[in-house]
Amino acid sequence: MMKVFELRIRIYILIDIPLEKIYAAESNFIDTALAKDARWLKYHQDNHYKYYCISGFYPVEKEGTYKKDHLYTITVRTVNLELAKYLSKVLTEHSTKEIKGLVVENRIIPKKMIEEIYTLTPVIQKSDQGYWRNVSTLDDFEKQLFGNAVKKYNQFTGKKLDEEFVWYTGIQFLNKMPVKMNYKGIHLLGDKLNLKIADNKNAQELTYFLLGTGIGENNTRGGGFCNFRWI
Image (cartoon, rainbow, N blue to C red; front, side):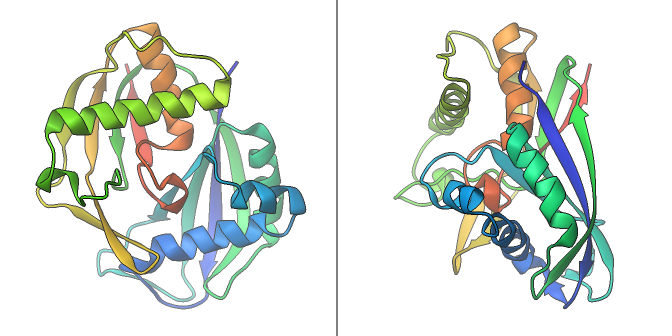
């Protein structure tokens, strides 16, 4: 049975980190931890879905800078048990020039009926033409969102999900303007979403899976991290 593993990592900030650089700092913290082991370095470097996602820092700094000598929490979720075990062990002793890991708390997210999910970080969907609102339609956006989710699920489970089902009954954009995310020196534009999840087996199964992987793309760089409400 599929399980979503959640790691809450208590961290100590070694230097001030501006808001626009937190995902890069966080990704580097995880990437360099994976690089400590040959198996997980290969996992990181291989071109495939990684099946984990990361939140931003908590609590949120309203002034826009995450401050040196302060404590924050990062949440990592994954559907990969071995990855969860590895990160739980290594992150408590791992540090970069920006972040020092202190304590990791682990839990399994219970599998209950999900009423809705809402993204805490922007949903990124890449296109050669740029931000989707400038070049395509909402229908295209939704098809890409669904297609990406199903492909991820199929590759992880080795099954082929029957796509003839309603995933959600309502979609709401929580941002008025595109949300910027820095990635390798460029700005990716995304959106924060609220999805009302349909009451059917496939919709519930897919959504539970996505709690552990994120929705959209760039999930290991902070994209598409979801929170949820049960019915």
